[in-house]
Length: 538
Image 1 (cartoon, helix red, strand yellow):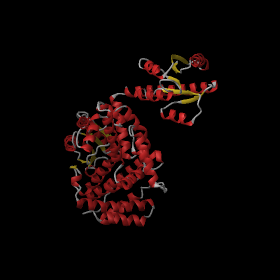
Image 2 (cartoon, helix red, strand yellow):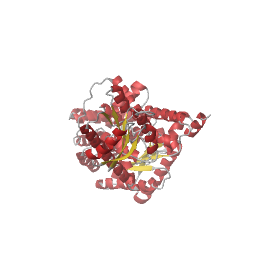
Image 3 (cartoon, one colour):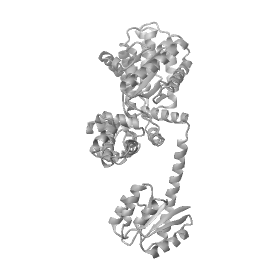
Image 4 (cartoon, helix red, strand yellow):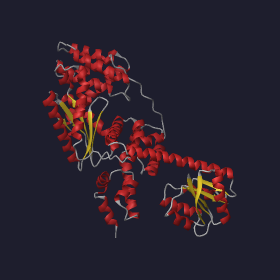
């Protein structure tokens, strides 16, 4: 049963509607009769009604003014307006105040019945959504961790549909992924040493999963949130945050040393790890991941079994890594074109980086370029795992004679196993229009869970394209623009409502965690939100 409050200064209209509404739809009952807007507001202060039906022309307070005040006090309240005036300006204002329907007097019973049915359907849908939300809130802590890990993986993989579907759940369940400046920590088994020690190739996945389990157990003992997952190549990835970037770095280093010691003592396995630069928004995690992978790829020129940061990515290493990357890219293009001659040329360039052609060097460089080729796929397909296993098995079982010719022959045979998928073409779009539309959408929805993927989807373009547009046209990243919008609106709320609590402001500008909001605010304004707010109070 649904309730309706009637507001009209004409008593006959009130009595007519009181009698007619239950006749048109027995699921509706009249809960109150009010002669003006002031009386209606007084009744609402102590009661609830699913729907308000109000006349537009009344003494003391018009129906439009009543609608405006009701929407301020009760944002989800459903309102229907009755009017004897068929004027567009009234209907336009009613829409601005969130009025669900606008019916003309004399009232058409068919129109009234249809409107009541539509509002009832809306209320039923909202009820179902609230029940689903309630079930989400009751989800176990383990379930929330799995959901968070799945979302983070979608972000770093730039899996747009999954990111778009999971982000509202993360936001509504108030899962705070960051509590301050964050870093990504990637763990990578030194597989060249693993294969050189003749450990079975089929056990690699098991060892990688053991790393994940050890990291997961250690992570659960951390004070601030630490989220652990496996990426597409079975690297264990950790998202962690702390009060300062240095604290997050030290936490990363501590976790690595604990895990490395366990693996070395119990299984004689060597482990390397890379920590990213700090970031403050979860949607910067994909860049942090790419940055960490770049350092991890340079491991071929570094000593295995170490904890690396961007400080280890020195200019000479970066230059070597870039040149090696170019050789791998040429190889990828040659494989894509199925051009054996160009594959041999690309592999010759790659072999030039190898100091020797011994088994350890072949394993090290082979385990560099094989996953690099796979990483160039935009999406992961089921057959990739099988091809990956075949390529690594061929590499591990090879018995070369330590010559360049033997190494080239082996690498060429592996290249024949690999295939590539095509990338969709891009189309020309008015970029100024796109940026204007993106800014407009952000300004209208900044208080909601808003991702680059979601905005790009609204515009019908890819997130990468939108990201590059922001950098080129705005001179700043999407994240920085969104952060600036949210902080500016937070300050506006402080100025308009000096007594508003910080946690209320946090929710109104699209943040989940007060601690995270406070950190971002301090980074932007040089002081905490409370300090800033106190300076606004005379």
